[in-house]
Image 1 (tube, rainbow, N blue to C red):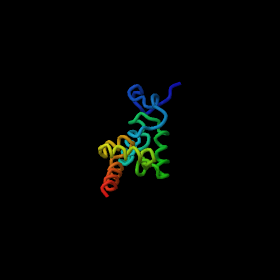
Image 2 (cartoon, rainbow, N blue to C red):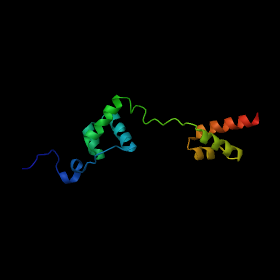
Image 3 (cartoon, one colour):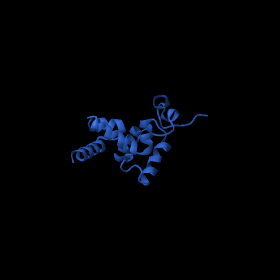
Length: 124
């Protein structure tokens, strides 16, 4: 028995037969969001991306809960005693904010704030 399809040739698209299942990468999430913003339907997005429609429709539920509105949120950086000591040691050795950021694994803005604090504290 043959199943009727609205596709002319199933070997050309094969989206339903080869759809990957599982979590979406951040690039796929962004691509799906962009396509939804242009008014594309879930099935169209699934066909273009080669994904299962159910996986993509999970984005809508996540968006309803406010999880995707601003995109993934970065975790706030927490200064531990070890990181504070390492930043102070690096400052005393003459290193700058960039080295502090690399050593304690924080962003440049946080490292520059710490560097400025250390510079003010030492000059007083």
